[in-house]
Every structure is written in C-alpha cells, then in structure tokens.
Length: 394
Image 1 (cartoon, rainbow, N blue to C red):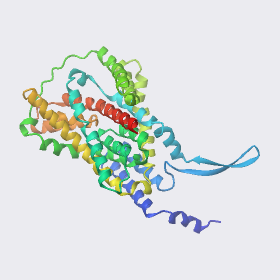
Image 2: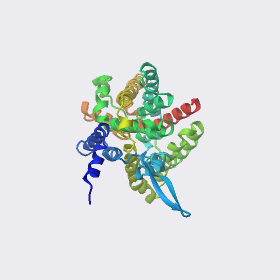
Image 3: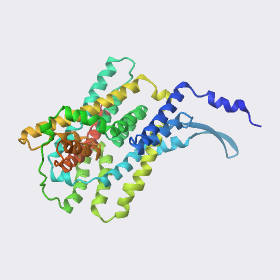
C-alpha cells in the first residue's frame, strides 16, 4: 500500500533555498539550450545543480548496513555524485583530461612565428592578481565575508578566463567555493562577445582599429612545433612545479596533434576524452551548488569580482596593445591586446571581427590567435604561480 504521507514528506523537505537553486539550475539549462551560452558546460552544471538540491549533491553520503563475518556493520557510503567528485575533482583528473583535449586543438604556430605576443599573453593575466588584491581587501572591509588568502586567490583565478585552471586551483585550496567560482568562470567565458567589444572600442580609436598588420612571419618548421611542447613542459615544471600537471596535460595533447603519428589518440583527445570529461566535470561542479553553499552574500560578491577580473584582463591587454603600437610606430593593432586572455579561440575571433567591422579588408586573425595562444599558456602559468604562492604562505 502506498503511503501518501511518505510521498509528500519528500516534497516538504525541500527548503526555500533548495527551490531557488533548482530554479537557478533551470535558468542555466535555459541559457545553454536557448541562448547557447557555453552549452557543453552550463547544461550539465545546471542539471547537476538540480540534482544537488534533490538530495544528490557532490557531498552526499548515506548509511548502509552490511553483514561482515556474521555481524551487522553500519558503513558510510558515497552517493554517485560524490563518487564522481572524489574521482574527478578531488584528484584534479577532469581538468587535466580537458587540458589534454584543449592542447590537441591548439596550433602554436602563430605564437612561434610572433614571439612578441607573449607580452600580451602576460598582460591578459592582470585580472588574476588585481582581483586577488581586491578580494583580500574586501574580506577585511566586509565583516560577513569569511575569506582568507585561499578564497581570495581562488576568486582571482576567475581572471584566467579558463574554467579548468580555475577549477584546478580552487579544488586544491578552497573547495568550499568551487561551485560559484566555476559558474562565474564559465559564465563570463560565454559572455565574451558581450563584455569585451565595448571595452575594446572604448580604449581604441577608429584609427587604431583600422591599423593593418603585415603577416609575414618567420617560417615555423614541423620540428619546432614538436620540440616546443616538450621544452615548455620541462621549463615550466622547473620554474613553477605547481603548474606542471596543467601545462603537461596541455602540451601532451599538443604533442599528439603535431607529431602526426598517433592520429587515433589525437582524435580521441579532441572528441571522446574532452567530451566525457567536460560532462562529468560540469555535473559534479553543479553538484556542489547546494542552497546552503550557494545562497549567501559571499557568492554575489564572487560573481561581481569575477566580472571585475574579466574587465581588468581586457583593459590591461588593450593598454599593453596600445603601448606596443607606440613602440612599433603604429604597426600593432591594439585590438589584439584583448586576446591575451585564455578564452581560445573566441577572444581572437572577436578582435578580428571588430577590425573587419571598421575595414572589411583588415585581417588580423592570425595575429589575434598568436596573442590568444599566448594567453592560454599565460593563464596556466599564472594559475600555477598563484597556487605555489598561496600554498607556501599557508
């Protein structure tokens, strides 16, 4: 016989916070499907958020009894979402697998042909450290923010505009704010076409945006693109050991692509591996978005600081682009400075599109991609350096 009281008891256990979070999960799914904002991440994050507030969070454990050697023993077991979280987020496995796929998609030839783009890749990381400073200051100004250096640093990684890097760093030093940091990182990545163009236009004149850049780069040999990932892995592992896993995963994927001898592995990295890892990453991150963890004043501040980090990255990049324009006597289009963030290849395409709007014969895409790949490397290194600094202090 079915007990209707038992059925409705489950419904009544839902608090207003859980109902609000379920609604937020539905909004994320709406943005993914209807607006197509980072659908491969926002859809599983949204669904994971719904599950988390229906009793299936990434923190879920339950008691189970088993008979061991003739005795009844009560054991604490993990729900399936916690199993995924422990296996993929707790071990940093999912972000690393995603970076293998990202590396297999990146072409470093534009960067190797124009090494000076490294400057813009470094400038695009200002948001990380600027936001760290601001978050630390706000934690002192606002008494309700129970943040320490670890939380401030994790919020700063939103400025990498690189979801896996932000998740990797946050899961190590401040896992309690993993949900809002991941949502902010991926949400602002999806809003690049909305956020960046007004900033780029405000900091450049029409004459600046119409600067044509000659593309006559030095030839990049196949040997160079094969040696590059190995040299970078060795160098970064020595200089910043905490960044080694991320950079190694990125460069492994790139080496498989450029070697042209493991085509099946290369295709698997670009498709099956990155797709499955992205699905589970989004689901488990969404599974951390419980009402108690997410609905508080601190999360609102994290979202605001994430936007500040993104804006600061773009501003710093364009200003450095302006500086390079002056140094080279007007040969650099400052728009490419905005591509020094890690959001590859979206940021590069946006800069190229704005240049074409002013002059339909102005093609700066390859230069923009050079800065964009530099930003991808810069975000990994900056995140690793930040992680090393925080862990050494703590």
